[in-house]
Length: 497
Image 1 (cartoon, one colour):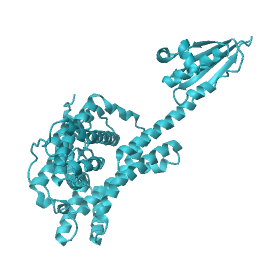
Image 2: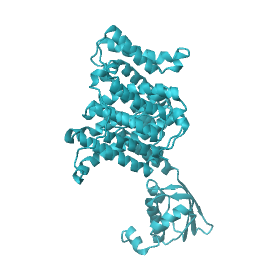
Image 3: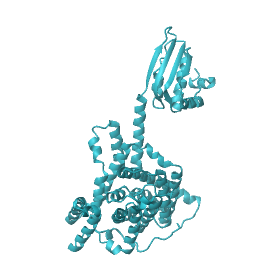
Image 4: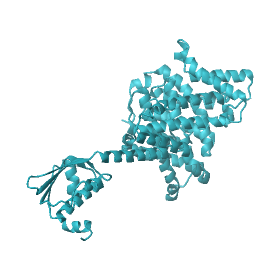
């Protein structure tokens, strides 16, 4: 059920969820502002979206403890729409994005994640680690030495504070990093960039805002391509992130429910002045690393975010960006799968090609969908090629040398169909040919067409052909699409000869 959850999801880790929620809320603020700037809209659009999405997804999402909000991947898709048509078309596109994602959930498209191989997931994770680090470079370029010192100090706190007896296990080190660096910056009066320099923070709660656009086919024609792209990118990033959080927490999640949850969250965001968003790998890892596990961590992150930006904006604006940069560097280091580099020498070449290609495409295009698409495509091609080689033929000739038996072992599909044909000797003069397919399986019409050609070629040479051993599934597809007993179709296949 969409709204079903257990008591453990909400109250199984109250202290850890609340503390991690504060850390995530603080980390969400500069990200939401930055992504709003990328999309070309006011900072409050990203902040309102982040609050709405986290609040809704915490209740109806399929992956407890995962953080969803405004993201860079989604913002990049919105740029042209905002530039050419304005904010209200973006809000309408966000609502339509949500509708498409809900439909995807009810169509159970979340199960498509089973087609994403581990090498693609690893490449996705490594690319995200690199992108998260690269996103921090503008804050570390053309700055004074104070920024580098504060960032290094922040990293020291993050990695060393957990070793303090008792206290280090109670309070998340990223939260201590923010508090200490803010205090140091204020005490020393350092002239360094702060959250307040990112943009004006909103001073009111989000309110219902119906997009002020004409409801006609022309509007649909404008927003649908963007909404479709946003829906695909959002679900792809969310489902990949859910898989990663599953691994980090050794728990499962409902991917189809997550699709629906993301959809409803984006619909709410669009109707309350926010842009469409999706799961955030960086903030999700911050949440997990800070002790967050349940739905309360996601909800508290959204509530704390709203309270901070609306009622504590003056204090919030004083937080040095160096503190948040230190946290995100920690996230990038923790996100990157260092073990994958060590294992690269032992892994098959095809696996490494898939992983590094995924990384290269994502980093080059800054588009997660492109990278995962290339990774899945390469993994599928390598798999098809590998399976096609697990096929062999046993043959035997009877004592009278008048009957040849072919016993096939393997999978016949588009990539192995030609090899299947080449395994037969059509020039051998025999009266009877037996094709034993007990240990074979026919997967598609390419395989059926190959069987047609084999039977017809033998008959053309004057041999009687008998096919035995077809399993039920193979027999169904062969009976439906096979034409070797249809004289008219045989003539077409043989080109009239």
